[in-house]
Length: 493
Image (cartoon, rainbow, N blue to C red):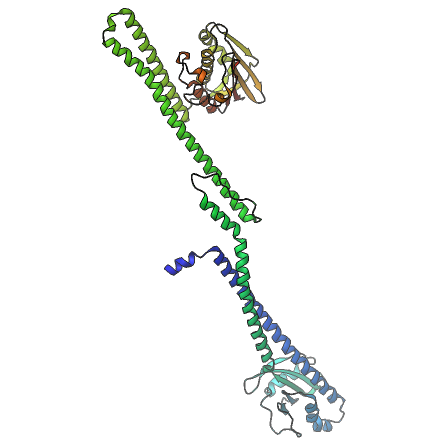
């Protein structure tokens, strides 16, 4: 089991090198098999061609000899002078009987025909020779036939006389073992060459594989350096290797997502801590005020009617502030959970006209101007929530504009496929630095810190959550001492 685990944990470089080695071995073995058989056929064919040249000379002499008696007397000498060393010759009559058979396997051949058939050459039965005589044509090609010793012989035949009615056969053969030394020598050389090739392939292939895997090793080193606290590192995306580039791109995309999620989590954690801190502060202030006045009343101030009335009014005011704060927090909680009331087809002009009288009362002596350029455009939304957005923004404008000279303008128009609601004022304005945080919960800029202005810093956060729940956009532009404008965009139906 341990050996198997070690085998499975081999490095990629080792696995590639091993597979390349096995593939090369298989290729060389297959190549040697083909080479062996091709060389074998070539050597046999060479021996066959040599036999054919000799037997062609014999057949030519036989065909030009007119006297049959002379042919029988001289046939041995004709064959003797025609064959080379280590070649067997036989003459077969038309009945398949062997008339003459000898082998040139020594430095000289007997001067007279041998009395016995040579055991070195192949000898077929009379029936088999008759079948050969009956074949059509001149018996081209060769056959591998064993002799009495079981040794393979490269054998060819030629007919004597007419092709259709031959008077016999001439058979020449040479041992197949005559080509074996060349085959074995070639095999030995090939094995040595293959061994050298395999050794060089391991050395060179290992170096090439290491060089090829260098980008992967670099990726591994970079990944080891990346920690949760340092997610801004990225892998190189130009490694001159498509697959490695794709891997780097995938890792970089993953790390970007992780970094974004991690930063978002840090931001949410920070916001939550700030939220808890601000909420605690906002709750503690009215509670402290209520407690202080209750303690004063318990000390006997309730006997003074003016002080009693002032204390009770203050307690009621702080209670209203607490109620508003809790309601706002509950609203934000519902919005954060994605709890939205039913949305139906709405007309923004009608909503503005419905709440205009209430806004006019809130504005008091300030000018409240309506500038509506759209009458029949509809959007999908919730009327009460849109009213709350308008109330929150207008209330924000009322808090930070002059009570006598303040001007609040509500404009409605279309832009591309969006309905745009613009709420602007000529109040104190917001600095560029604070403008990026006005939708944060409990945020109030330095010029808005006075509690006399009212509010607890949740109105704009609620407005933003509601608009985003309507798949819309809300933004603001402001200049110090020149006022602020809020822009709400909702998609037109």
